[in-house]
Image 1 (cartoon, helix red, strand yellow):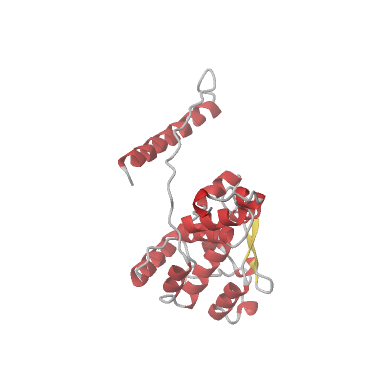
Image 2 (cartoon, rainbow, N blue to C red; image 1 turned 60 degrees about the horizontal axis):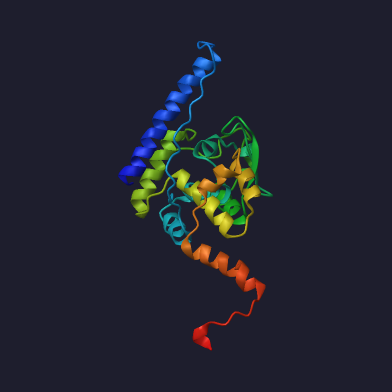
Length: 235
């Protein structure tokens, strides 16, 4: 991170902290009139995600449960805590529909997974249909339900074993970027990710130069107009 972008992040952090305090004063009527501040925006930067070869390399060091977790996040875009909170009864294994209860912002939503991820879950839990509906879908090595810390330790270990730095949020970004790359529209992507605005969804999208070049090649306005422009060099 450059010194400039680092300063931007610092100012943004201070600004958000001050705004929280000001909002508290406003709500408690401790000020004579409402105070409003403008928080400096964070720097725009490309955030890492995994491509298909990196995902395959990561899966090679996973056990059956870890494989199911990785594929679930890449296929659905779930947040780390949302994965930890999943119960058997939240997953409709016959059609891949997952009910996310009280996610960020205390809003329920529906996400979906494909057949390959369904198969991975069934490899991990062959007796899925006979499990208690209120049982956690995933458990840590000690047999207790996953929490944020235990899942973080799992990802640190997988990063070391695979040689690929990976976090749950990176896999969530991978879902967003790859879904758009493979044809999903932005509105559907926004709803699946649980974002309040489409602008938030845009921040997750990391298109590569090749993707942008191919997109332009398919939709070049001038080429599509068939203007029959011939270069001087070709005459």
